[in-house]
View 1 (cartoon, rainbow, N blue to C red):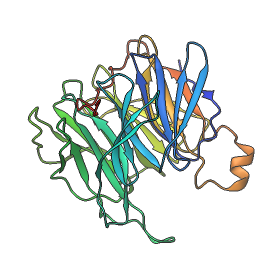
View 2 (view 1 turned 90 degrees about the vertical axis):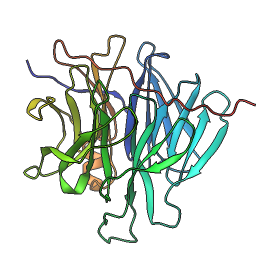
View 3 (view 1 turned 135 degrees about the vertical axis):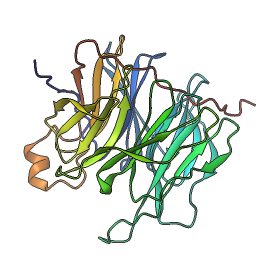
View 4 (view 1 turned 180 degrees about the horizontal axis):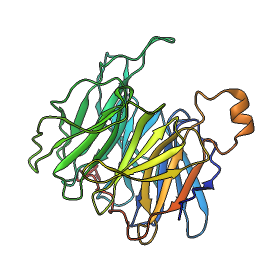
Amino acid sequence: MSIVAQPVVAADNLLGEGVQWCARTQALYWTDILASTLWRHTPHDGATRRWTMPERLASFALCEADGWLLLGLASRLAFFHLDSGELQPIIDVEPGLPTRVNDGACDRQGRFVFGTMHEPEGDAPKQAIGGFYRLNADLSLERLPLPSVAISNSLAFSPDGSTMYFCDSPTRRIQCCDYAADGSLGAPRTFVDLAGIDGDPDGSTVDAEGGLWNAQWGMSRVVRYRADGREDTIVPLPARQPTRPALGGATLDTLYVTSARDGLPVDCVRDEPRNGALFSAPAPAGVCGLAEARFAGAPSLG
């Protein structure tokens, strides 16, 4: 039986991204990067809420501290309190470089791993001048020993945390490396080579079986790859630019996907209004997600 994705929230996101399921609040969180907006949707009652951010919000992490998120803003990392709106800056990222923060995810130890992307002037091509970083629980920031990137994406971790997935989207290769509990990394290797597709790998999530779900920009689909890299399931979407999947719902067996309108022709935006929506679809029988890893560092409560 084919899996059919349907719009859940007609968000009209310019660049919807970063969707995550919070098991504690039974809610979905995601960002519209270009609109500098954080979104929340609770499926059980259909309620949706938005928060305006001080700059573009590229990625985020749930925190162990209730009510807080770790924000990957365009130029810096910060804590954000959902109820009060308090923002606690942590550290600037790549100051002086024409880059911004992009995709991110917590490892199984509660450290936030993220990457950046090049923002050239005008229509100049993006260059591999960004990097991958890790914010530790003590709020120290370190650059990871991985190749420089033009557009970081697909950050995710295997169920046991021993493998890290990542990509530089323009290369059309999802890579992985060994990832030790102490934070040391092995040499990168190719997990999936997507050179033959007419699109780019975007955000990813990993399910309880170790399958990696990847949203493929420009391809109107999300693809599940088994832990050995073999293609397993394709979920088509009625949107051209899916950006990131998440597995959520009460039993973690609903696939949610963000999408984007940015860069589409005017007639496409007019005639295909589901671009920019949040979508959902049932996961294949027997497949369920993992609870999102939470950032272990604590905001100042004084």
